[in-house]
Image (tube, rainbow, N blue to C red):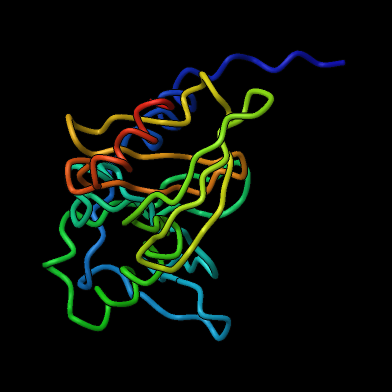
Length: 181
């Protein structure tokens, strides 16, 4: 078996390529809706038949710094859209549609009940999308405080639910919720 020599120049080139930030806009990238309703792009001489849009700062800056990535387990970043406001209305709508699918997060508007059984909390809530029931692990990291009053809850199936302001819940609803926070 022949030993391959260490190629420092090749390694430096690959490292530089990995660290390079490509800014994507409508001057250098064509954003396309596929027949299946997914996002595809063509940038330079390279076409990507299906890509994902990922918010780099989903809670603090959801419409800026959108990472466009290849699909699959070993997804890699193709480039970044600095600001959705810089895109045409049509392109921004296409990307926002993809982001909405990825970050589908119903807002909890009311709490009917929360029960604790065998290490799980079972929620029966009203959301902006209708009535919903879900479960979370007790004592885990399924409830994240995004601010003093804003809460993000991730259920056992990794669905996300948001309470934008717990102070807008009734006193009875807050009391039910306080037992599990």
